[in-house]
Every structure is written in C-alpha cells, then in structure tokens.
Length: 500
Image (cartoon, rainbow, N blue to C red):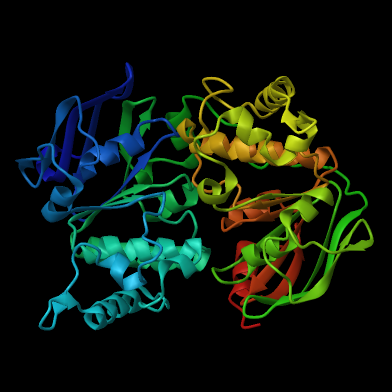
C-alpha cells in the first residue's frame, strides 16, 4: 500500500454532490512520482468527477488535495497547468479552425516581429519536433478539422506532454487509437515514467491496464473501494471489484448459422483513402474489419452508407446492384450505421431519449406531416426495455446519460429502422466493462435474429471474440481475409502492418 509520504499527489476524503446525489463520497487516492496509477470503475463511478476536480474544472464540497507537499486550493484549469497537472480528456477538446501546432500551444504561443504577431514558424517547428519524438507523422500546419478522430487524439496527447507536467491525467487516451498507435503511446508513457512523471490512467480496456499500470485504484458508485499493485490482480478480480459482481464470459460461443448474402461490394475505390475493396456479409454473420489508423476502415463504412462519394466500384444488396448516394438511400436499402464519433454524429445531445431513438424513422411515426408522439413513445419504450437503457425517463436529454447508455440509444435509433445490415464503427469506444458486456450480448442477439453485421474495431480481443470472418486492411488495401478459427492477434497485426 502506498503511504502518503511517498506521494506526489494525495487525495483525502473528497466529496462532491450534484442535486443531492453524491458523485464522490469521501474518496481517497495516493499517486507516487514516476508511476502509472490506473483509476478503474464503471461509468458513473466518479472517475471523471475526481479528475475534473484535480484539473480545476470542478470545486469539491469537502476534502483535501495535497500536491508536492502543498495543499491544492480551489483554482482554475490554468492554475492546475501552471502547478504541473495536465489532462488528456476523453472527449477531444480541439479548436477545429486552428492548426495542429496552434492547438498544441494554445494559450502559450510565441510572438515575434515588430507588431508582436504569432510566430507560426516557431510553433510549427516546436510542434514538429514534439510529434516526431512521439513517432506521429502529422503536419503541424494542418487544420484540426481535417484530421481523423485518432489523429486528433494524438495531438491532444502531444498537447499534454508539451506542458512539462509532473502529473498527467489520461482519460481514455487510446479510445480512437489502433494497436500500433497504442504501442507508441505506451513507449511515450514509459519515457515519462523514467523522467519521474506520474500518470493517472483511466481506461475500460483491461489488456491495457495490465500492460501499463503499476497500481490500480477502484471506485464504485462514487465510493473508494480498494488500491492494489497491478501485479496482485487479475481481470476477473478487477471486474468484480469494479461492478460488485462477476460478469459471465465477455465473448460467449455462438453457433448461429449464417444465411443468405445481404451485402456484397466489388472493387470499391476512393482515391487517397482505399482501393479495390471486395467482400460480402451474410445474414447472422459478423464481418470484423481490422487495421491501423489510416487503413481506410471508417472511410469504407462511410462510403457504403452514402456519407462519402465512391469514385468507382459496385454495391449489391441481396444480389441486386444498387446506387447509394446518401444515408437516406442506405436506410431505404436496409443499412444502418453506428458512427465511431458517438457524440458528434450519433445523437443530438439536448434532444430526449425518445426523440433520438425515433430520429431515423420519423416517417413511421407521422401522419399527414405531423409526428404522432404517442407512437414515438411506444416505439422508444420498447427499445429502452429491449436494450436495457438506464435513463431517468424517456424525456431525459441524452447528454446526461452515461457513455454506454448513449451508445445504446444510438444503436436503438438504428435498429428502430429495421435494418438488414448494421455497420458498427468502434461500438464500445469509451464505455465501461459492464456496458461492453451488454453490447456484446446485443451483437450476438442481432446475429441470432438474422441481421448481418460489419464491425470495425481497434480492439483486437473484440475483433477476435465477436467476428466470424475478419477483413484486414493496410493503407487502403485489403491484405487478408481470415476465418475465426485461423485468426490470431499476431496474424492480424502482421497483415495490418503489411505494405499493400
């Protein structure tokens, strides 16, 4: 057990209440210099609230925080940064119109010349050196709005490192990263550890925790549960500490027979993104798509769903050649799409659970141009019950739900349109182990109902555990198609890193 005397950061008796509900109830945390301290718990356990207090976004009701021997008084984010505490947020906080370099050094820009203008050349040079040290090939003068989610995440990591912080909080830093980028991040973390920097690491990916963490603290329902060296825990014990119960096997064996072909694509191409893509998917089958950042996985999904225009190639639905020029075309042909960017593209935050769930199928709940709200409520109620969405009520804004329940709302919206094919892009990104288990059960239920599924995931255990076949991409080309029985993590990574 870590003693407070050994710590760079100590939290004692921290309590925070929102509308009479205790988000934190006398929580404690002891973080040593030069260690990776994992903070674990389901969504709603209090992890984000605790981190927001440490970084100055929230003020606690009671308790104390000791940083480098001094009490950390209520301040601002800027105060926390100056003292040496930095954070990589789960939701990317970028300024889209600014460049990569301008985002990294936002608020710490260098100025030059007679008029004190921003010295972009210096910013680009510093950002380029930092990204180069991280092994990231992103041009510093690129505007953030042109980057992928994974590239934006790497820029956020670079921003945190550039602050020369002594404690860096990483909240789901790999949620949009592929295996290769995760390996790069872990090398960066080990280098930071060697320099004495403490890392508070929040992740729902168990394999990451046991790879990188030295110590693990568990919160549950806003309360402190336990702190143990990572070497003394295994996955089952950690899950039990987190959820207060055992969870059955995450990837139960299924014996569902695949049916008729639902989708077939031939020679799909989009210059600079992917070329000559060929695959099919059948009823009751999960086709997993794996690859590194920039492999073209999401771009292929967007093209099939009509979000991006194809340069060439053919799409066949149930053997019939179709033209999909828009999402409306895709939905009409029985295709549903769950985007990797849940918050940006999956739901409208301020609308209610009912309004979000019925959004893609409003025509089925309207008469003479007017929405039948009773019909909406009936449909939404059934979907909330079927997917076990935890909500205060059908009128609750989706922005106030946990990440796992937000994802269920997005999936519910897609399923309400009765698709024959569902494309799931990073379906468990940023959600806790309990919610993951429920999403996995849902995927198997969709298979049993004869729905065809294309699943894109950066988590290889997820790809291996749920897929019947696996398509591997590298730099926009398909390099392998593997059966469930023959696929291994090593094989997939070898094909994903292959120069197509």
